[in-house]
Length: 411
Image 1 (cartoon, one colour):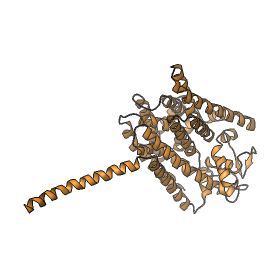
Image 2 (cartoon, rainbow, N blue to C red):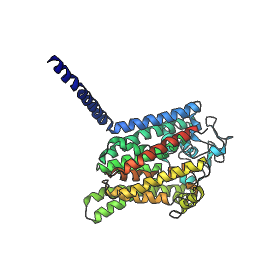
Image 3 (cartoon, rainbow, N blue to C red):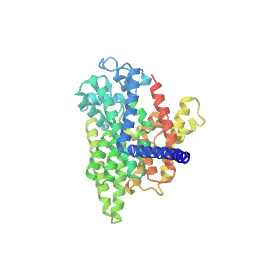
Image 4 (cartoon, rainbow, N blue to C red):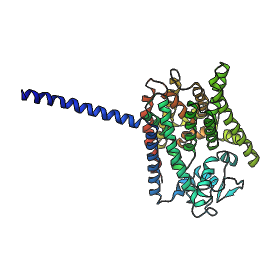
């Protein structure tokens, strides 16, 4: 009898153990199914990447600005600004210049000259915030730009997790939004895509919660951080107008939100036209856009088959980016995201397909330029219960790791 009781107790132990494991798994799933979890992950990763850069650069945050000739002069730049060789110079130097003197129309400030003054100044917000955080001190601007990107990464992670949950997904799926490989360039080059993306995703989430006044404010700020973000509010306005034509009152919020951003966009264009005697949109379209698929076809003609490691990486980035947008188009049928977001996907993707050959010739350029198209495509995918998210998750995360590794490896 005692032996039988011992056997029954022993037989129950594995079941009890499995039950405890199942309970722990459920607790883990519940604990990570929060926007705070995705915010924590993106914040830690962003801080870690920047910490590695700072250790590599001996604590000199200005090296991440990537200032260099021909647009930055070593002779007239402050001693606090590290000057790189010409082949390492990049757009972060223009955000630095805005951070030093955001209201100046002078040709050169702190040794930095704008290549396209109207276009650079229409992307004012990141530099303006850096100026506020640094107190206008040139030596503090690089640190302010880093802080803005880390905070933006945290906010973007939170909004991504919240959007994933509102699409019926576990919050962790929001990392597919937050870990866009293009953001690796933003972090390591001091550009503004993370700030614009955080404002954009938070604005879209506010819209889903019917907080349209807040959505209008956030999307207008996104436009001031990165003018190409206007594709999303324009899509919201078009979607809202369509709903109103169908006599649906829920179209009024997105229509007014989109129109308010369009007004801010138009006002910023006029302001820079007055200040610099050139239209930012004209400078952008002339230097960045071409006919649909024209630039893409030219670049594919050069890179297929790829010649060398750089061309292979560029082709891999291009293929994964296009695959996500194609998956977004296929997932459109059956997605549950709001109609106005589905409409906004169209102009966001059209912008990507009209990039010129020069932008397609560098992964850094086209991955930054395609940010909005990627984000809207992933939102569409997350709203579809089919396996599209599973199909794109692994390639995107692999590309994120490779891009981060590549950026950290560069001198």
